[in-house]
Amino acid sequence: MKMLKKIVREDNFLSLTGNLVIAILGISGFALLARSLTLDVFGEWVLFITGGSFVEMFRFGITNTGLIRFLSGADKDSRDKLIGSNALIGLGATILIAVILVSCYTFFNDAISNSGYNLFFKWYPLLAFFNLPWNNALVVLQADRKYGKILIVKSINSGLFFMVILFNFFFIEMQLNQLVIALVIINAFTSLITIILGWDGTKLITKATGKTNKTLLDFGKYTTFTLIGTNLLRSADTLIISLSPMGNAAVALYSIPLKLTELQQIPLRSFVATAFPKMSKASVQGKVQEVRDLFYTYSGALTYLFVIMSLFTFVFAEYLVLILSGQQYLVVDPITGFNVVDIVRVFSIYGLLLPIDRMTGIGLDSINKPNINAIKVFVMVAANVIGDFIAIFVFKSLILVAVASIAFTIIGIWMGMYFLNKELTLSYKEIFSSGITFYKNLFNKVTNNRFT
Image 1 (spheres, one colour):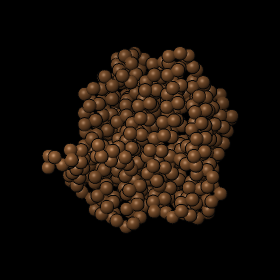
Image 2 (cartoon, helix red, strand yellow):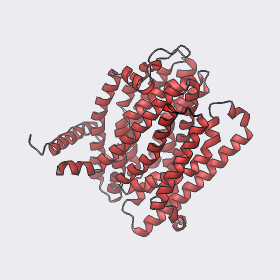
Image 3 (cartoon, helix red, strand yellow):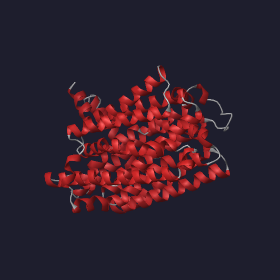
Image 4 (tube, helix red, strand yellow):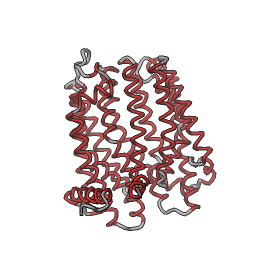
């Protein structure tokens, strides 16, 4: 019982639990919307979410990674200034983005209204202000490794919107505009709670200084690009497909395997959320060997886990598509000619490569090399965009779009290991041996060493 309590309170477990709960709610909501909306309307919803995710990478990428790194070991005075600067810069970025989007919607209204992005340009500027405080709270809580509180915030936001989707599915069929209005209200409510609890740092805006602003912005000029690039690696496929003759129907079809890939990445996001603060703190304290050991352990453990998950996804691809989106997505689509199940299987191979790629990026940021990580991501984005254009406009194939994801990830792994090796002197062999050691130790803890 004591061991169980210890595991439940452990950072990785809390982070994984939080992401798992949110992912279940998100994927369940996605599945219900896929069943209740027509293909074109569902495609418009996907573009709204994709556009919002991309812009939020810019808003929060400016300061989030830097804040987590510099809060590691900061004293009370420095901490307040850094959190205040994070809130101030985030507000400024939100205002800038809102002005740009509103201006575009005003001057190019006809073109936007007739595209799949009408919902995004119309509603996101308002949503951006209402979700700012609770997103600020998440990054502060992550820096403090308060994963239980992170779970509370995310559960409130995702849980309430899932209830709206359930209501929409079983009782009243809402219009997309009504769903978005509900989303805006829920985000405002979530932010209000974090403000009342003092988790978001809004009240510390007045403590921001030019020095802390500069500290976060200097680090953020690289991490912003890195996060935008990381988001582009996920959303470029959708954006390019939406601009092609394939249209919203192809966007909706491609979103199914993308959503399953997000499910596969739950443990990756969870472990990365705990690895980055630990590696950053060790780096700040000059403990190079500890940084190296953490990199090996997390990379190895996640790689073995993803082997199992990717194999499961490949074998049971049809059942996963059926559960997520319904019977209608199992057959070859008569309009586009694409088979969702085949794309899911390609993405299962892509999943094998994600752990080491993500950990090299985390490693570079943690040792204060965000510029190198930005270069790595830039090359990956370029490779992905080129691959997407060839796949879509030359071969007119969604499967080759997924294959392009495998190609750019291999490039990312090679670059990440090359640059990180210059600082830490790494070995691929140690990644896999450390992963085995991790699971051996975990097994011994769970069994109280009865089998050793």
